[in-house]
Length: 249
Figure 1 (cartoon, rainbow, N blue to C red):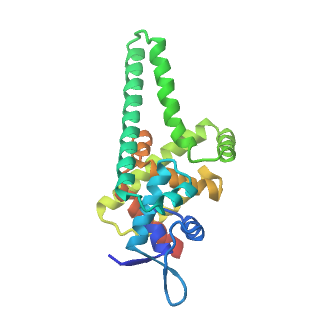
Figure 2: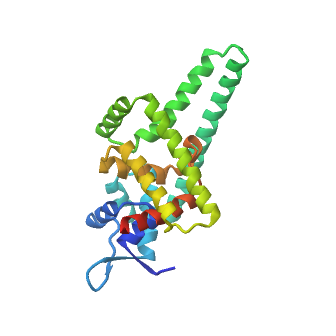
Figure 3: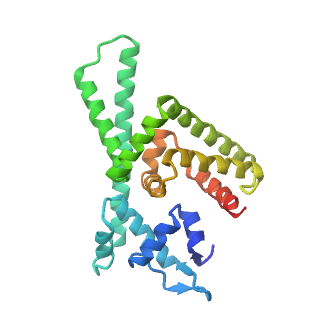
């Protein structure tokens, strides 16, 4: 494993955008002090530790200004961030499990033509709204309005097809990974291209929404995995290597 990383390599390995890393540097949040002879940023292990703390604090809802103030506090304890992050993830997992149980109970009763109480429907609405709030947290009101417009433009049938396309793509990538196909193989690179096309279709080419989508997936991965059937993290690492090869072509 290298002891230092260029910004592009770090972006590929973490899923953060180069733009985000540059911005963190610009505001002094994660500012690498080492550079190559030609002036490229070099991130050390200490920088990555700090970056992980930033990501965790962001996931906990801290603003960038609050994170900077927190990290510059001499009494700051990094282990406390991990403890809080783990607690929040466990809370999100529990929330998803509760929603799954509620909907499964309602489904079984309706299938057996049994009466479903109003209270059960109310609980389902409440928990669904809490899950929805996870999504809204990562987008500005303008971006949410834009995504709502995109949804209207595409229509329900196109959205359902896109969801199926994602599941088919996950399965295709997993199959190649299971076979031991190199991520630089043309077949996998073709799948990486399709991956990018589906993201572009969702975001409409909006770079801000794409960046926030990356932040959402990274910060809420356990929830996204349960709610939307996201594959394991190894698959994301595999397709990221294929995307790097695609971008070099």
